[in-house]
Length: 336
Image (cartoon, rainbow, N blue to C red; front, top):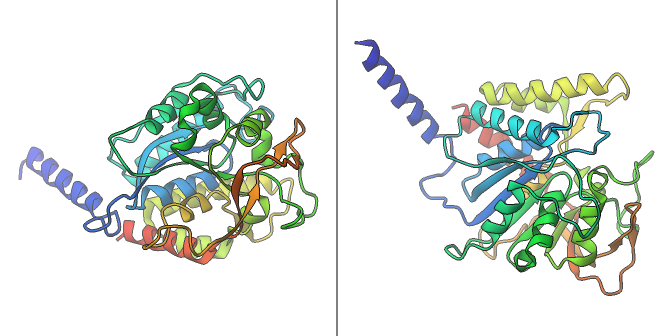
């Protein structure tokens, strides 16, 4: 066999292997569109959530946005946090072997100056363009696992998009009538503190439908290190990559905080609440939420009662078993 023929055979085998990676791709079609917006250059939980999302055939991933951290975040002190986040997403997609042309866009490297002045970025423009599409009836979800800079800027730039998407956000502190804060809690809450002005724009003045997963809910997404080693690390190069990324962060943090033997993959509920909705009467039926009036968020990042607040979903109990079992199964399928 000539080298060219061998190369062609290997290429065809690689394409066939990739074509088998999507679980149930022959009869599961996308029923929602999603834009994933996350600080992939920070806590690696976003990379776990992105992997899970990319392996889920019921979602059409329209774009991936790499977003900034708080300017003083220890994960990345640079002025190019969004570019670093986008590159992390691209690296992960290469490890998984994603061949579909999904745009990976760097968002703004800075937070909004105030709650009425949007940032300008390619990511903002993409959200607006996707939300205003008229050639599809698939509902659009914008999944934010960090700050809200891009989505807030998009709705400020073009308010028409407010009723054309649903925002699913991992962030915000506990509501006192639902759960107490954890011991030694941080205030403002980590993701809200990335861009308080953006959160104020979303909660205080916009009309975007919001599904919020506050701190008491996303802290339920706990994975034991033993399960990481047993269920994720053995799953080929994807499992190895995710595990080594998380172990690197655990080793870094361990110098300052004893993490014990678990880690919170707090961004994974973004997949649970979208890709894993019920078959009939589609909704995240195995997770529980309450409908609350959206609070006003003040300049310090605290909730204030708003008698005119629109109704939003606030999730307080998540089906963690479904979420992780589905992730483990899809990783195993990829590695078959």
